[in-house]
Length: 597
Image 1 (cartoon, rainbow, N blue to C red):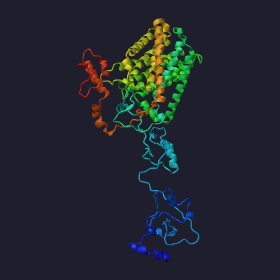
Image 2: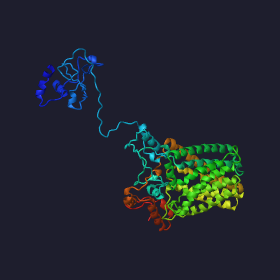
Image 3: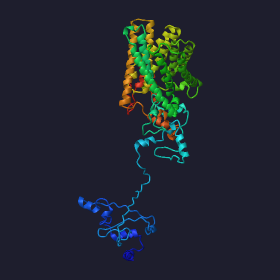
Image 4: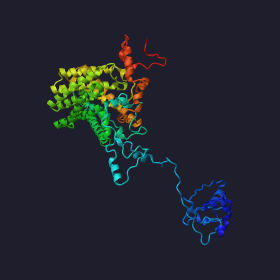
């Protein structure tokens, strides 16, 4: 009754009956209501007041109040109580300020309540754990997380959708067999590996992709460059016309061993890509330029078979040739059929110098087969390669103003023109048994193309490094090997000097590329950037059609500029048409400083 009487003044002041918790707060006041004195046995450590006096500083108290969910719960005996006390009165456990503790004091229980979280606020995540749970790459994975989703559904715990990492319970797989027009519309650059400003990609562009997704098929070009060097040094060590150099076969053994290890590593990495990211491999196959590099792994194995050191073996089994030529034959049936059928991938539409990689495999296989003693098989592949090389040579050589001009960054690929006739001359010499007139005709064509490119120094300046350059080193090495073979038939100072010069040039080129590759791989760390070429969207953006004409008029495509430069120089006398490639953009006043009136 006493407690009830003491609380009457509070009821009189308030217009309505208030909960006991609010009554306690209003009766005790505000100052020091969160401090408790005289109950030091209930706490561990000094009281708040003692700490404040010792530090001689003002202490601002943070109060956490556990409010009942309803006013009725405040009067229930099991309701949670929060103690408030001033500096003069002891605190009690029943929420009444006038009640005094009777008997032994009860230990006060404090309840820690969770702080409310604002809407849209997510708990912090560890960056590495978040990267492992990123589901935005599932569309390119071979299984696309299907097994994980099925196991989760069987356990009754379906995977939730996280808008932050882009995952979903039912990720949509990208469209299969992208048309070649989509690659030309969405990509630009020397190797169709740069995304146009009006396009979007299906993979995240705000982070670095997994290594396997960034490992392109053009990496096999490194194997072509190094393994062809093993063949060249084997020819220099075993040819009679180069005995004066006293080249040891140890160099051939070392280079062949390095090539073997390199081919094994690249094969293993790309095999893992086929296993885990098959969709990326599929897109590379349908890429109009990348598809030619699918011949590179098998050509590299042919080079390894041709450059095997004499100390390892002197005779290879015939079955090896059939095993290596079977994939090349299957690829040729697909690629050459597309060239001839007149569809989206006809030769006149997708022709580029990298198509020589699909031709060289025929001549390299014919050369290896003739070296192993085979007859019909090498002649078959030699004939197929000769027919398609003639068509490809004419298509690439006859570049009309309305055709797609080759960007400056791809000027080194012109050396691929040298590869096919160089290897063809050696293959026919092996088939016939001597370096006869047919072999010499092919060799002289290759030598002329080599010199016509070598004298154009400005033609190979001012472009950035590309991993695909490795595929363009073996034509130089092939020309050097063909020169060594020719010097065995025609031995004089000129042929011997030419053999040494071309071999030295090829070796220095490969060494320079090796240093540059190591620099980009371990110092700059940009050897394998995100492979944008395989991540283009399946459909054009909505604004693509409406702004495509404006975009090209504003920025200007390379085709339009090249056509204008060609027509400008073609109608003027005494001007070199090729100089149109080096004409700078006009100044803002409309005058071009490089064009003389």
